[in-house]
Amino acid sequence: MKRIDDSFVFRGIEFKNRLIASPISINLSNLDGTVSDEDISYYGSIAKSGVSYVTVGATALSVSGHSTSRGLRCHSTNYLKGFEKLNKEIKKHANSCIQVFHAGQQINPEHTGFPPVGSSEYVVPDIGVNARVLSIDEIENIEEEFVSGISRLFDVGFDFVEIHAAHGYLLNGFISPHMNRRKDKYGGSEENRFRILKNIINGLEKLDHNYLSRLNLRLSASDFISGGLSENDLSSWKTQLSLEKLAIITASMGIYESAKMKPLAMKEGRYRESGRLIKGLLPNNMVVSQGGIRWPEYARKILEEDNVDLIGLGQALIADNNWASKALMVADDTIIKCTECGRCRYIKRKQLDFDCVRPEAFHSRDSKWTKRKLAKNSSRGGTK
Image (cartoon, rainbow, N blue to C red; front, side, top):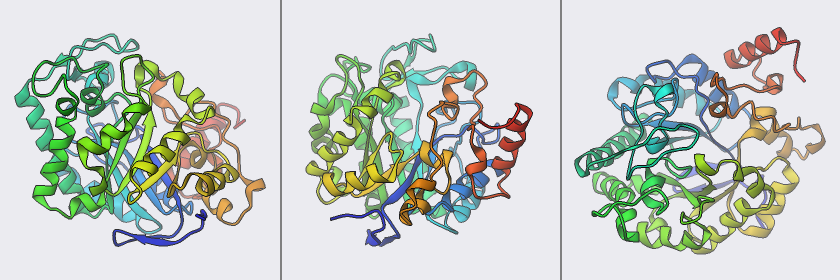
């Protein structure tokens, strides 16, 4: 029986427990996408929480692939110095992982100055701008950007790199028949729709076969859209991509168009069920269960009953940076509860300001992020 305090070694990396910090994009980088002091402060604070590893949120590997004005980017070697500092800070207390992506058809030009691009013409209702169709030459260039960018980040020293192929971003937009209506080698059949991601994985393997042993994947178990991906397609991810070669697999759900479905799916246990299904398909991979996990009791239940390997924590760690440490000590009654107010979901707020009503929960009192949020909330009349 698996326990949250299990320590073990996987792919040469020591895990001190089964709790991890899921990727959260905080929109606090410098305006050119380089790592800021606030990025280092925030992720450094999360690393102190007691989790086994921390995943840095979505980092664009293309000049125009980010989704917000202050999203992280790493499209050239000029960006590596900041990521070296960030990785070093995280690894003082935990293992490190970084998530990479291309926002694709969900790019908002109002926030980034770049137009959306994708597998086919597609309009995100909340954005209202039609995505320009990528040419084959452009697709092949993006594939190379992923391969070279991931290689650079491994060279920086990150223990794992996670490819983001969910949430309606570019890779999800090729794989999903709801968004991909191409008639060439990148569209139509299942094999063609998976081609872009398969080429990236194969490119990394050719560059260094050891990369795949530390390559993670976040896939879409469901788009929550008729004609899109669903849990019935999970076996396709395995057969098309040979996922058993990769390290850690996480299933997420929903795209921008269906974002309102996500909280309900979490409460209904669909996220948990997708993790269980993937573990059945990939018994030799590490599989993460995540999505709305707020209390240690629920995390323990998932590990005991679903045979998954890791518990992914997001908003719970924002509300209480000591969540993991308290859970490991079975001090559940001292955990500060996430109110699910949505303030940390900055992309749904006009000012794109990542925030929390309980920033005092962060134990790192010297954290620049914490101090700024405490001052901001004080000006509002205190926290609630």
